[in-house]
Image 1 (cartoon, rainbow, N blue to C red):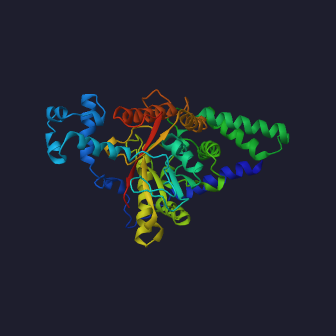
Image 2 (image 1 turned 45 degrees about the vertical axis):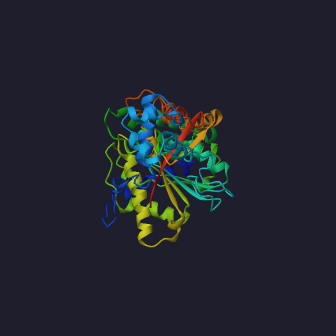
Image 3 (image 1 turned 135 degrees about the vertical axis):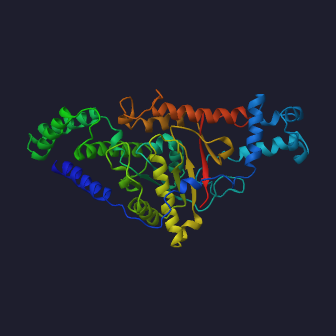
Length: 406
């Protein structure tokens, strides 16, 4: 039992030590500002035709010459020769973004698929800014990758400790103290002492007070346990779960420390070790507290550092960007869309619900009264509904991705 709190203290010491590092280098720590979609074929065409569909209430293949003329889009008819040919071009572009094989389908013609067939299986790293963003943003895709036998790693970039309510700490402390009394007759003095210290701290804590390092460590451990539980549900082994605890996050406040070289090197070591064929990163840059942007800057900087030293694994790697609980990709920017059945959407919800500290009592739900699983489902269903409205296959829900070109 002493090990339980010894772990708390050792993790706490690690975080405190690294939080003081602020080395500088020539690293580019703002690569999210360079994200663009210039590589997407016929992106402007896709946007114009989709906007026309929404304005007329018609699917792509039912747009008429009159529709194009009445909306000042006759130039497309001149370019392609007829409304029907414009429609077919855009329909095929959208159709080719849909895949049930997010890691690529082995032994298949991949010339029109979002992902290449080979290598198979692929080594995949999913970067999750907080310990629940992976399942909120791409839980269905993660399960599909695992089911299709890819080697999936989940890398939790921050501890997420400040997003745990005090009542969760109290509940866990009551449990471990009760466990000590019932099974060790209260013999573990470390647990008894820490229980009293934390109980006294909580009693005196006022609104706006910062948590003690011990409380932050316990909150981080709560989130680790929930993440492990969700990974177990998704059949991801412990050896493929990585808690990076990036130092920039460990300020104990909503305002974080600046991103620095220490953060990037932690990510870079993981990438150099795994040598992934696929990387998934958060690009929900509308995150109100900025953590998603900083985490993605750390990943992109690590990739850039690997490129600088000539890492050969990069030549066979693709980077896919997902969005989270706050917004979805515009359809002209979607390059891969993974469908889910009603059962698969329910499985995604079940994984999100493993993060119990992030339900009703979570401190940072924002102005949106929906819980994160509800936001995720609404967003995924809306994406599927848009594809359906455009005349493509009708699915229960869909997760969308855009590619970041290395």
